[in-house]
Structures are given as structure tokens and as C-alpha cells.
Length: 259
Ligand code: KIV
Image 1: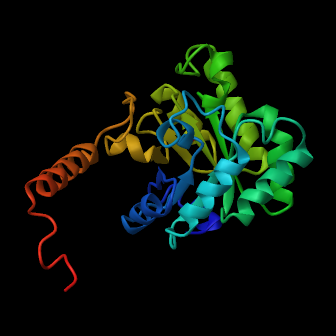
Image 2 (image 1 turned 60 degrees about the vertical axis):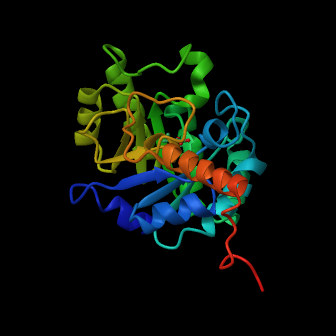
């Protein structure tokens, strides 16, 4: 998958996107046929055990992008710009985005609408493709007063304008997170780039989910995620059986030993 191909999926078929954070999760998502793999800063919550995404650093993102890159050969690999990497200036944003590209990302994602317009324009100019992200942007959790649905009532028009500005600045796609389904559908109809929903209903061009949420590996279960396979149960059962067999002396067997 390439950025132009991904963009051209609009109106043809629904792009499937998923997060991944290291070689095995990247490889499994890639082998399953996902179109776009995002090394999300959600790694703060689901891998590093932070309360939210705000503590995630550039070094942590680079480390996980490098690991994921080793497992992904086919899907488009996008890296999240962590909190603090695109707030200070456009020049600092470009420096940080280039570090993620050097680590193996083919595009970056940054949260915000008009506030990041200049950065999206500059990154696009210097050859770093950008995925936008509007609605409930987790890095603004303190401004929102919690993880709340965005774009209800009068906010809907503002959200439409923000999404449009992200497109006009040059983004090749935009994530709509926790937005009422009818608003997301209207935004999708208005934009010429693919909208990728997470908690934004079925009317988006494509969908994205967090790896751990759809496989029941997370500490919390968000309302917008469906568990498609219970990996937690499979893993726990596997580890219990291993422990039992070590204790009763049936593992390792002679086949698992060197003579
Ligand atoms: O960090 C992340 O995983 C994300 C997705 C939820 C879109 O931004």
C-alpha cells in the first residue's frame, strides 16, 4: 500500500486500519491483510501502562516504529506524532516527523484541525505525507474534561470546518474519533480524502481500531470496539497449561530435549 493508493480507495472500497506497536503485532496485522498500520501513541495506554497518551516521548515512538517496521512489508505504515512533538513550532514538527520517517514510517499522523494546519502544509511540502485526526483527540483530554464524544449539536459545523481545513492543508486522509455517526457521515460526503472512523459509525470511508481492543488484550474496553477474538483467554490458558506441565514434569519431553 502506498499513500496515493490509499487515498484513491475513497468511493471504491473501505480501507481497513489497525494499530500495531512491535514486530509481532505489525507482522500479524500485515499478514491478515490490513491496509494501513498505525504505530499509535495509544502505545502509552496499551503497551507501556500509562494513564493516557500524554507521557509518550519521541524516543518511545521511534523505538516502536523501528520494531513495527521489521514486521510490516505490505501495509502502509503510519506513525503518530506524540504530545509535545508538534506544539512548539513548524520547524520542530518537521524535525520530529523526519525522525519518525527515518525510523521507518511512510507517513505521520497528528491530532488537531486549524491549530496544525501550517504544520500539515509544511510537512506535505517537504515530502512527509500526513494523516489528520479530529473529533475526540486523546492528547487534548484535559481540555475536553475527559474522553467525551465531540461534534454534538452546534459543534458539528465547527468539526466539519476543522476536517475541511485538514484536507485543504494537504492531509491524505483523516481520522474521525468519537464523533456522532450522522456528523461523521456528513463529513465523509463532503471530503474528497478518505475518512477513517473510530467510534464514528459506519458512514466513514474506513475504520481504525486499537489492536489490543479488538483482541481483548487491554485493561479497558471502549464502547466503540468489538472483541473479534479473545486472545487474552487463549494466552492465559496457554500459560496455565505450560505451568501445569512444568510442575507435573511432562514438559519438556525427550523430543524437546537434546541428546
Ligand atoms: O493512537 C492511536 O491508536 C490512535 C487511533 C486510536 C486512531 O490515534
